[in-house]
Image (cartoon, rainbow, N blue to C red; front, top):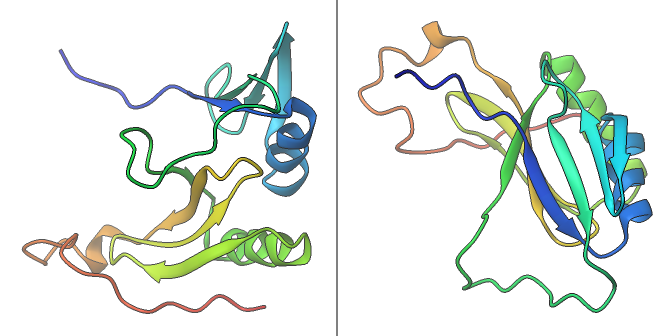
Length: 146
């Protein structure tokens, strides 16, 4: 058996419309369907890559020391697309948590309207890091243009 990758992520959200606006208008996902309290979005090559499930405004907030999702990562086409997305997030006053060179990728991290952490990244060419014994061992500073 060989795995082919992650097909999609489903997030529980308080306000479906507010989250839909974040994932579609700011991050660029295309809404492709809905069912009751769920919306489905496409950003890559699957029937859907992301779904949002509305659980209501009284949902408990995320807790820092709780087991569960730490973050999920969305890959963009190239460095230009990453910089454009960074500027779009800044303009929309999205909370940006940090920008980092992970050696194998260049990324920045944001919070969605419910506090879920989303990493936005572009992969670094493998020839830049393949010679390293453990390219995941450390990070380097990285700068994206404003």
